[in-house]
Length: 353
Image 1: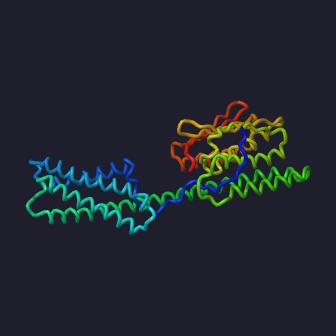
Image 2 (image 1 turned 135 degrees about the vertical axis):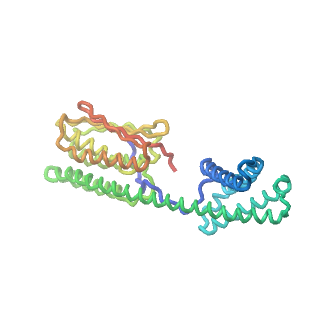
């Protein structure tokens, strides 16, 4: 199936980090980390409050019950308020979080004082409540500071990844432009009208590929780039170049890293079909796998080729970009069989939107 041309969206591969620094407390991982850290604090408190030979298990159990109740209830409230406060300023978000923790601590302290005689140490409920609120303010401030520093580290990491991706993309573009200009140069003398059309296609292609990128491109956008490039090569190679599209229509609106498919198609033409007198067929397949997208590009290959440097550069560039974006989940494999060169890459499936 050949993809229908569409408007190419502005694209980027690493989303701009937001300013909201509170983790998603609806997710189990951050809640588990908080519960574990708080339990360690309770254990330290119990060890310091009792002699080690007579370790007070009752103190550990009841303090754990009280503190974990405060932590889990506060996390639940902040989970529900996340959407509401996500647009607030840093200071206002911090104030809201502290207020939630203080209110939950106050209500829980009052309930524990009434229901659990263990916490009645004779000093009065006022002092009990004041002590708990002071501890809640100190620990809440420390946790908020930790969340903020974690978010700043994440922002820095994302900016470094974006810089590296921009550098890798910058290496791809001159290589692609050089190959395309060579194709147009071969048409100028023999077929000037086709050369003019090729220049127009190149201008459109460069406009698309050099757009300021703000979000991941879609599969349809990358296929449009391939169409523009193949249109230029078709003018030069004529019937020697055939393309077989095998595209899952359900994937057209799903994200795909920008400039990751077109270099594979370019290699298939420049190092494969164009090197053969009889030409050949380039097969482009984009299919869904469980939780992943599988991209396959196949082309006939000559027995030997003197122009392999750029070929390996493009493949290594794409491999590095997959590693930066997806870690071990993004893979590129090559299979140089006799008379056929096959490239497979897969990456995690991301739903559109």
